[in-house]
Length: 169
Image (cartoon, rainbow, N blue to C red; front, side, top):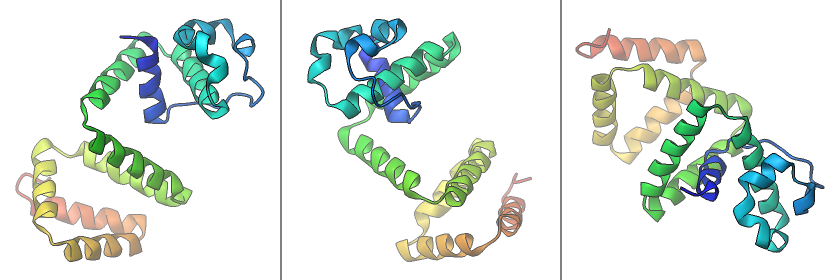
């Protein structure tokens, strides 16, 4: 797969680092960045400045990855390419919404995602089924209730829910 494809997964995943705003010409890129971005060399000057910055940052990030990280990035990109355009747009929209949250809300979302990943596959399936069986109004009430709780209260609710489920702990 082309290097450009690998860079796109990095861009989509938000795994980029900042580069100086002045590094806009091809000659100002590091030799490593030029090597990774060689497919863009002929049209580099025609790219918008923001895209140049994102690509240069992605190339820098790519060059700092070890082999395992590159393999994981390739796998994520393969999955990304397998999504239909509507799915990709939903992911972009969710990412944009997440980035617009205050830092404490972002942390809460990360913590909830961590807890979800730690559940057994059976627990995740039951949780998904319960969520899908709810009406939109019920879902909103659950969201509102959970938002109003402190992290410790939220954890107690989650623990109680796990204990009520067969095999839940």
